[in-house]
Every structure is written in C-alpha cells, then in structure tokens.
Length: 301
Image 1 (tube, rainbow, N blue to C red):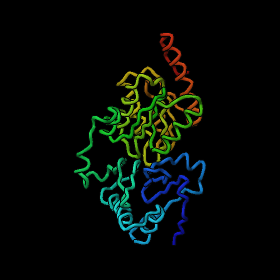
Image 2: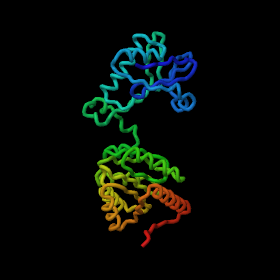
Image 3: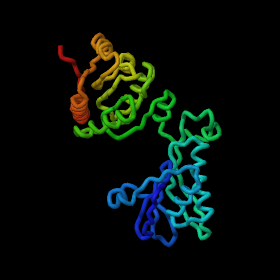
Image 4: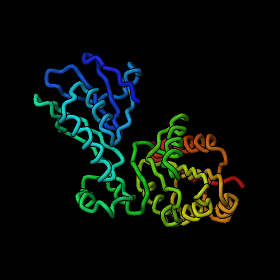
C-alpha cells in the first residue's frame, strides 16, 4: 500500500513517476507545469517523493489524484506514459513543458527521450530518425567505435573505463585545480583499436595539454589498454604528457609494455597522485604555450 499525501497547490512540488517523469505543480493561471528539481530538493526535500508506476489501476488513479485532476483521461494518460516507455525501450522520459487544458487533459509541448542503443534492432523506425548533423562531430565519431564521449572545456584529456569511474576521475581533477577536457568511457570490453581511436579523439582537441588514463582492470585487461596507448601515442607522435594509472587484471604486463616502449608515459599507481601530476603538467604546457615556448618531457633515468 502507498500513502500519497495531498500537496498544497500554492507550493512548488515535484513528482517522480516511474521512469524519471518530472512534474512541478505551480500556482499559475496558465496551469503551466515546469520542473526545477535542484531548487526544490534543496528547499523542500520532504515534498519530493518517488512513486512506483505499474499496471494495477489503483496506482494510476493515485498518481493522477496526486495531480489533483483524477479524471478518467488523466488516469489513461498516466498509464500511456508507462506503456510508451515499455514499447520503445527508453532509458529516460523527461517532459519539460506540460499544459493542462480545461477538459482536464494534459498535453506535452516539449520532451526529451533517451532510447536504449541495445534495442536498435527492435526500434529501427525510431533510430532511422536520428539526425547526426545536429550532434557534436567528435561524439558521432566516438559512437562509431562504441565509445561514450562528451567534449568539455578543460585542458586534461581523460580516458577511463566505466561511467562512474570516469565521473570520479573528473571530480578529482577539479579537486586539484584543473578542468577535464572530456568525458570518455571506453567501456568494459574495449579493444586496443578502440583505445587508439579514443586517443585520437582526445588529442584532436587543441585545448588538451595533458592526458590522464585511469583504468581499473576487472573485465578490462590492463595490457590491452597499454597496447592501445602505445600504438596511438606512436602513431600520433604526441608531444603532450601522458599520465597513466592502471590497477587490476594484468597490470604488471601493462607496466612492462610501457617500460619497453620509447614513449614518455608516466605510470602512477595512486589515483590522487596521478591527478595531481596531470594537473601540474597541464599547467606547465599551458604556460609554455602562452609565451610560445616548446616543452619536452623526459622520464628520469
């Protein structure tokens, strides 16, 4: 059983329904519903609630009732939202502008939908509508190699396996006074070729002054990452410092690959030390460029 409290219509509220459907009920003459999750969560956290949305009609009636418009049409629309998500294999449904008309029907004027790429074979009609010209060229190129890439404005290029570890890596870079140039997740089963392509993407950004590689080898093998790094760095003739932190499966083999290569790759076991080093080296390169001075890095003997 679910106990759904009645909210005050004069106070902004946010309701999470099933798959991240966010609505804020505001006291507006136009009945415009807008979402401000960060603001609401910071000021009135007790008014944020998560509601499970499933097939039983009692749940749909309770959700519609929470909106204070428990009409048959609203209940039906609530149910349709859930079914639409199920049949189209969506990760996320975000309605940013929803209008309520006098007939008690909700009409969505703007929405963001995120579809599961793994379901492309089932959703061919949907995926055929993707307009690649509207997307960042680097992200399109990354997608061709099954890499998750998002360009940012910083100076330290990041290559990481796993989205969570990638975000943590960006956080620790910022903690030490630098800014990440990208989010790049090579995934858990990347090949040496994918790693090489990832390096090409990172190095193509002229704002990148250092590269930080952070790999935890669980499913991923560290030696595969090392092979990709060496191949890419050799092919691209990179003149910026590369800091690598590897832990996990075949890490010793990976270190041996770096040792026997002629590349200036700085291997560090500790993530915090690696982030500090990348931040300092990036700063050196940036200062040198400002005064038109070339910098060459040599590993200690």
